Image 1 (cartoon, helix red, strand yellow):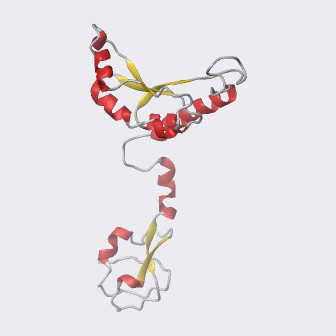
Image 2 (cartoon, one colour):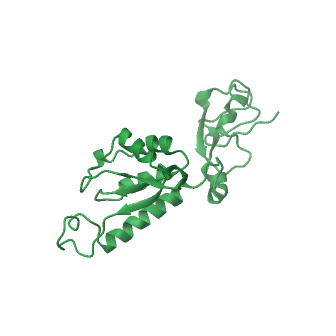
Image 3 (cartoon, helix red, strand yellow):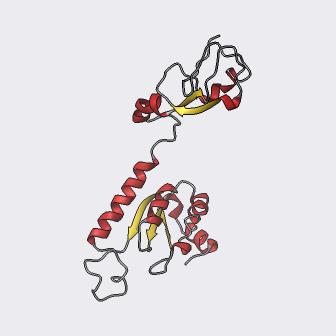
Length: 192
C-alpha cells in the first residue's frame, strides 16, 4: 500500500540502515489478481535497498507469482494458510490448506533449482546427448564428386557421425567442389 516516498521514509528510521533486512513485496488485496502482483516492482526495490534482500508476500491463489518471484531474486516467502477454509475469520476462505501449502513450497524449491548456474556450458546429461542430439550438415540430395555444393544441396539433421560438419561450418563447403559422392541424408565432412 506504499508509494516510493513511503518506502524511502522507512529506510530513514534510526539505525535501520545498519541492519540486514529482507523487504517483502506485498499487494494487500485478498486474493491478489495476477495483474496486480507487479513482480517488476522488485527491480525498483532492489535499486533502493542495495545490500538488503527481497522477499515476497504472496496473496494470489496459485503458485505462479511465487515462482516468478524466485526468478527475480526473492529469498523469503510468506503465504496465508489454514487448516480449514470454513473456519471463521477473514483469511481462511482464500488461504492455502496443508496440501496446497506443501505444493506451494515444492514449487518454490523447484523454481530455485531451475535457476541453476549462470555459466554457459552443457549439463552432464547434455554432454552425453550432444553427439546424437546436435544437428549436423547432411546432403539434401545425391551430390556427385566434383559438383559445386550450393546451400540448397544441404540441410541440418540429427546424426551421430562424429566427422560430420557442424552447422556453423557451412561456409567451409558452400561454393566448393565436392571431394566425393554423397548420398541423400549422408553426413557431409570436409577434407582440406
